[in-house]
Length: 394
Image (tube, rainbow, N blue to C red; front, side, top):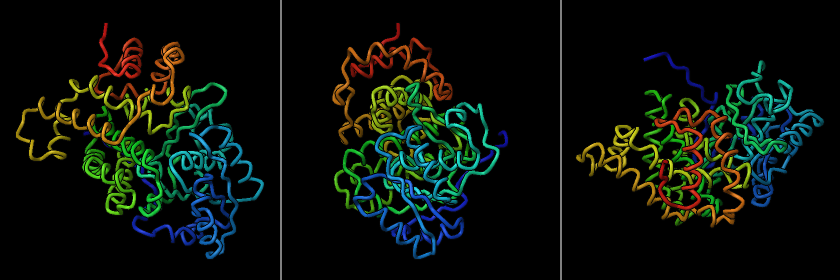
């Protein structure tokens, strides 16, 4: 086995009411904080709570609450301007992946300068450590609090830029399952399947290794068994705990392995049709699994032995098929929508297939998949996704 380097946040604080430590942790890292969050977190009182905890630790704070959609370069530059004008030196981000990804970009640009698009595909490498960032996730799905990647939409080109460098790793992750109790059902479903996708892709990726395998399998076991209970009862703290912990493990897994075809195909859908990242991943997972399964049967069977130990006596092909069938069934149980359900019209979607296929390939993620698609196959997979039927390759 070749030597492998793994990156994680310097500090991870996990458990119920760990949010209460945000002021103490911020005081270790800086003297004036910018909170990056959104209107939902403000309405729920989480921003005010963070401000009070920071003040108690002697840290004055300012808030940027403009994150209203998937993260864009506009949000990044607005928050960066506030960070600079107020003389902040530490960032606290409370929210889902959009808030945390925005904060990661601000943290890197504040220390290194430039525009965020310059960092895509490693064209610019951050030479300085980012401004210290404390990430507090409020959904059990993205795992962004434990990854060195951010996804920011370039509003000029309508491309979702997947940027991965060590500098984008948060300094501290505070992971409190109580914060996820307010997550609406549809977001619980989408982010939960997103987390399952992170773990599954980390495990079947060509870049997987033993460290990430253990994280990914543990994450899948938790997410698969606890997503439906969390979806049915958002106040089920046991289910919320397992989902958030599974999401954290999945984030650490894919950050140190890679994502694959689902993520590569998902980003263009989000950029062009404004489908949230978790939703588009969830839409794609069944289609991509059917396409990929024959190229990773042994890995899928290994997942099956963990998720379904009572069925582990079956052959490799049978067990691999069971995993795919059960994941497809789980997506149905948590009411993952189709593209038409989302309001996307066929006449708008189909003409964009060549651009989406090009953008997916440009992201680099499909090349990590056990079965690497051509541009033609990507077009046909997008067609199959819209039509909700198996892809037929010509």
